[in-house]
Amino acid sequence: MRIQVQKVKYSCIKAVQQAKKGGLFMLDVAFARARILENLKTCGQEIVPLSQACGRVLAQPVHARTANPPVSVSAMDGYAAKAEDALEGAVLRIVGEAPAGHPCAVTVQKGECVRLFTGAQIPAGADTVIIQENVQREGDHAKLTAPARQGQYIRQQGQDFQKNDELLPAGRRLGPRDIGLAAAGGHVWLTVSRRPRVGILATGDEIILPGDPAPADGIFNSATFMVAALLQQQGAETIILPIARDNMESLTTQFRQAASLDMLVSIGGASVGNYDLVRPALAEIGLQQDFWKIAMRPGKPLMSGRLGNTPIIGLPGNPVAAMVCSIVFVTPALHALMGLPVGDELQTEAAILGCDVKENDARQDFLRATLAPSPQGAVPVATPFSRQDSAQLNILRQSQVLVLRAPFAPAQKAGTPCQIIRLP
Image 1 (cartoon, rainbow, N blue to C red):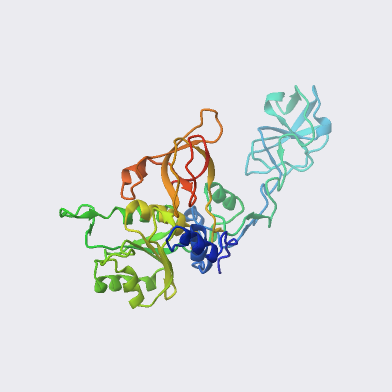
Image 2 (spheres, rainbow, N blue to C red):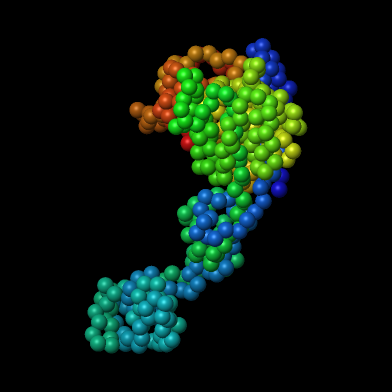
């Protein structure tokens, strides 16, 4: 199934004009998102047991196999009777008893009642339930101390839903309440979208695994594990590939693994340095590059393309930039592969600035910021950190949101409205 995306906010011409205005040639963020999304297809379907379906995306709607409740039942412990007999002071003869799961076969006649318990089927002939607190029982007779109206304390058959009602639509990510509803509708197996298999490939001679002996200039591979955790949280099956070194043989060997993946995410090596060989290595084995460089900060050297049938997104090497770009570009691409509805525009919330910010240049900024309640109790206050270096993970960890700043935005004072994205 081909993913349908919303109309692109900016045309390619607009994006190029905007980039040229700042002396750069970079794509607009919204346009780049739409370009990534427009050619993605879902990963197919699979059937999973209900117990393993939480967090998965429904590929087919779920319809009720039975009504809920399947029959009219009592909502309270008490006595089933005819409403015309349920008057204060009336004395009714008890002609049967009905625990939950054991319906009483008698038909209630005038002047009669049946002792029943919560969840028990309402016997034929009865149309009200007198709660036990309003009954004084004497042997096989029940004296009413308060009246009861017709239909009182009865859960009618199909009150929740009827047989064949659509309970859950296709394209919905299942939560615990959805699982409960599907179970109530009689389902033990659900058809869901297959989890996308996403490979994550770090590149660079300086990158080492956490725990390995570290040379003086070694950098622990934080970006790969951070991006993998994000995508796992969002529903992917992630495969962390061996680190590719800064030579064509190592890079092409690892990139050939893309054939077995639904998406490949590379980290680093996509800039313009002598040892940034990701794009040449991919080109050597057949990359169809869509675009390279985005008018955003952090994250300018982002690349998108396709290797055979596998979409590839090349992230910047700095870990903060890799994470921000994963939120803005990789996560929506993953959602599209999962069958979730995705639009090209960022989903933002309103806030107010907690400090002054400087004027912006040609790139759209994503400022790491804290979020606090407003003293006035209205929209929250987002306060960007003074340090925004894309290698500072501790600042990212302390942040709750990203503050969006449009290209060429003027300087703004504290208290000015802004737009934010919450960090996962």
